[in-house]
Image (cartoon, rainbow, N blue to C red; front, side, top):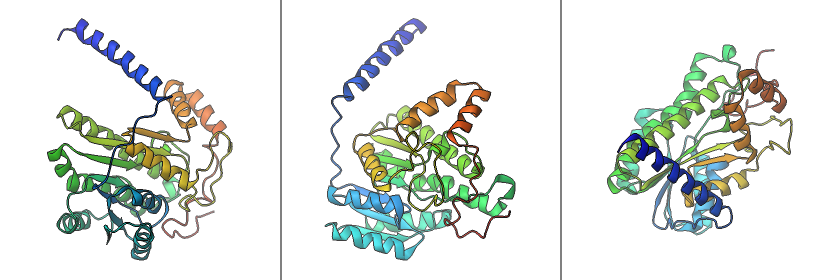
Length: 310
């Protein structure tokens, strides 16, 4: 194709996609049928992971639950069985350990089958300012929040690609789209997770594997205990999110093949402004939204950190 023809094609298709998006404001897309799919959720022992498992329960899927907390994942298994799921399997897995991820993944393939919906949900946050964070905790943040996604993709994506069928879900964060004071390691790990998911999605499209879908979830703080003690400066603009609401929106996004899910909806505007404003203006916006406020009273329950230095 020549330059003019390809440019015209981009313009025409852009108009079409905009019209399609406008129509979907009034006629939502149909949910896809996931009956018989094998759904693996990491970090399924509590919080959003447990809630997603419960939401998937009535949809006719086989559930594979991973968590580092055996009692937590066992309880999630019990809860989904109460909702009528007969095919549920739970495994103890430290997602920060590549060898363990591969070992448990092989066990899942033998005992359950090829995973067709992979939800990378496990995550940790240290809550230390960058210069106060021990190297070991920074490394652990990346091992869980970023590198674990590499290893689960390596383990389960080949079968999805071979069948040109599957769904990759990254539970990231709005902190992976905009920097937050006191969360340097967490933000960087989530930026990396988003970039990784986007890049692999493009690789799949470039190789004709358009049947393998991707959903990237970027919520604001969720009231799950992970960000205990955190407040929001403007609750009407950026509310602390209800876990059940977030879980419902994630399932909805998966069932409609939505690529990006930002929560709350005001995040779409905030990210758009951040990407279009000059640095001083963006910093002013961040200050207005409370991004500069001291976060040290937050997060400590996540990995049993000692008291932060004063």
